[in-house]
Image (cartoon, rainbow, N blue to C red; front, side):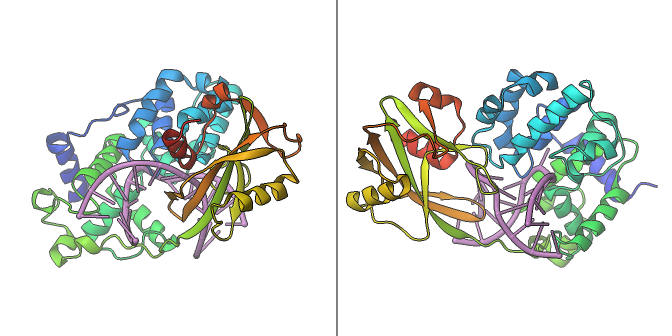
Length: 352
DNA sequence: AACACGGGGCG
DNA sequence: CGCCCAGTGTT
């Protein structure tokens, strides 16, 4: 017996859901996978152009698997959460070269892939293969929380378990893919985070949150994010028509993207030529060249931190010792490298 | 179990 | 300025 919720939702999908997306109704697991990875924590409108670009450049998973890392990161540039791009490559190559290009077709095997968690595994399993697994994303949490009037936080182990159980009882087992698509569309279009369209909602007569006036309080999250400020001083070192470039690594932001020589400071540094020259002498243990410009302070807001910093352009008279982990890149080759938005925004305003 | 990971859009 | 977005991996 299908819950009322499910029937009403599926009826809405046929009668009232006009949301269109290029991957809707898609059955190619590669395309579904690609779209799902791109949309993790990312609004559909933001991911759309990236999806098209990837499909144009890499029509099959083998095309993606054979591409150079840098090419793929450049196409991902600006979308954020760059570990998704790294994992995308790992998984593409695993499927193309180790699995003979055949996408895994069970929930359990899909879940094992790098970059795929419970949400994405359920999405691919249901969309591509018709398997009955309910997706649980931000939309679904919100719809279920409001419909049942549940105030259990969605970002706890207990909460996730509870919502997952509910989500799977509401699932339309005869058409899991359509159902999953419908509930996410519904959350995005009707049961929105702010100013939801309760007046025209097909679930309004049964919605506990609406009945009790809790719509704007649900769902509940237990954790609040803390934001810290970091000070980044980028030295744009050039030698003739080449630039010194670092590729970020470790567990910090912008891993795998490129940057100039960075000094991170605990405090702001005065934009003073003598001080910055001294700083540079310390970092490089002496250099030969001159500072040609110091930018205004630039800002970049991320989810967990605010980056504040300046860009200092330096013309070198002599090449650096090849020990700083910096590589010398010709100006014309810079466009092949992926940079964080903090740097690209600066470059756009102040071309090299 | 907490936390960090980007960038953009909205009220 | 805070919250949210077709979440996941790491500690």
